[in-house]
Image (cartoon, rainbow, N blue to C red):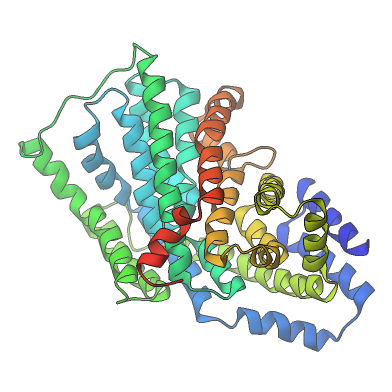
Length: 430
């Protein structure tokens, strides 16, 4: 009972606005008081978990994301995509979705993706006739592709806490991410067909002077995912090494080629990254100790017994776990949700025969969806602030996209294992 009270207290504190690290810290003190234990041992548990080179990738990808955002590298990327899609009715909406997918593959951050691509594409979408609510909702729903199209900071954390291959976790979310791109694009085309006032951009031949100029400008941006993802998938670089290379590549490209930033701007990027990384590391330290207390109190076993007592059917259990993760995603940010759900649910998933790599994709889609599902919905509110669109106009198209894009993607990923396991199996990582 005391364990359930601790979890309920955690949820209540997060809902009322208590900082995530402080909320988990309060729960830790509560468990420490009830269960006891040596403070030295407890500290050693947290330190041993943090002492991992894999975690170095997180601050480096944060730095790269900040440089890409401030350096206007996304401008060149969008320009090339518009050559192929801008002249099709509704094509600009697809271009925005694809740009989010590619940009997400570079930064691994949905917030950076929304800030960069949103600031570029929203004025273009409004100019050709898109409603402010739908345009904002489309960008908000496409932004979490940064959590699905690798590299993803969330998947690094999952692989670290679950003790599985980072590369396998990266690959598990690729196909779900592509499915989401297709479904969002279909919704966008249906919307465009019903709006006769939506215009198209003038068709630009790639061999024309304007097309050649755009393509030439976009090449450095297009090479970014090729270098990073190609290096990771080919085995030439580890994710941590790829994160370091992304910084080395992004800084001169952003400063000298796109001229979106100056050397002095790096200071603010480093400060912001340091703040973000410090918060994440404190959170990791506390959550890992809380997870240890969960194990000591047999919480995963109790959850397993409870769910298996309701039904022995694997598919029913998966449905209940998805509902649980959707609720967690609605209340917590993706990092906190990932670190809480992994130790609680992974033992149950293993018991009912779900591969940890398959579960990586399931939890990734769930927590990506949580970023846009009220009441927390951080991306929804960021999107409204960015575009200044009223929340009530953004909510309806957001719900449509949740129902007809995100939920089908989640169900397909959950109940068709090969969607998540195809690429890891292809590369011999499972």
